[in-house]
Length: 225
Image (cartoon, rainbow, N blue to C red; front, side, top):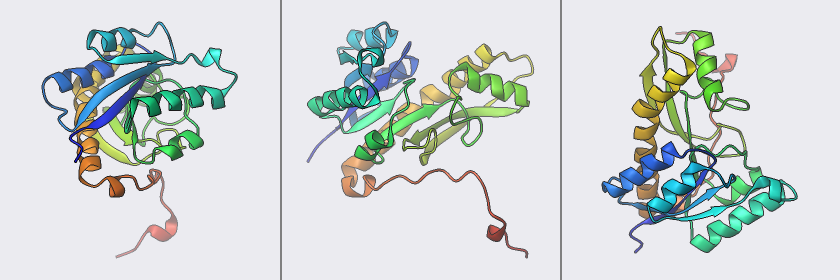
C-alpha cells in the first residue's frame, strides 16, 4: 500500500505558500504527502529557488514560449505524468487552467485564495486586488480559503477556511501580509494533508468530480415556518 501521495506545486511568483508547504513537510506535518515537483510559468519566479534549496525538482513552462493554451497545458501535463504527480497544488499560480485540464484531475487540484469564498473571488480577483476590494467594501472580517479547482475560477468545493480580522488602519499590503501569515500559511498545509490522507484512505471516493460552490439562493428554496 502507498505511504504518501506525490504532490506537484504550480507557482508564478515568490513562493511564500510553497515555503509554507516545504516547512510543514520538514516538520512532519505533511506525513501523507511528498512534494516531488515544482513547476513555474515564469523562469524568474523566486519559488523555483525555494524549491531548489529544499532539494525539490523544478521545471519551467513559459506560456510565452507556447503556441497557445493547449500546448502550454500539454507541456505541464507531460511533466506531471513523468513525476507521477497525484495531487496538484496551485500556490500563487497566475494562469487559469482549462476545463480539459481540470477534468483530468477531479478533486486532485487544490488552490488557496486570499478571501472567504464566495466573497471577492472569481475572474479578476487575485493578489492585492482581493484585499483592495475587501477594504473598499468595508468588511470587518476577511480570510483565506483552500478549495478544489474546477472549470469555474474559484468555484470548486471548499476544503478549509480561516477568518482574519480587518483593522481600521489596514492597507491592501498590510492586510495581504496578515492574511498570509494568519490564514494561508496555516490552512494550506493542513488542507493538503487532509486531501492526501483522504486519497490514501479512499482513492476511488476522493476522485469523484467536484461540484461548483453555490453562491446564491432561489426563492423556492425558502420555507416559511
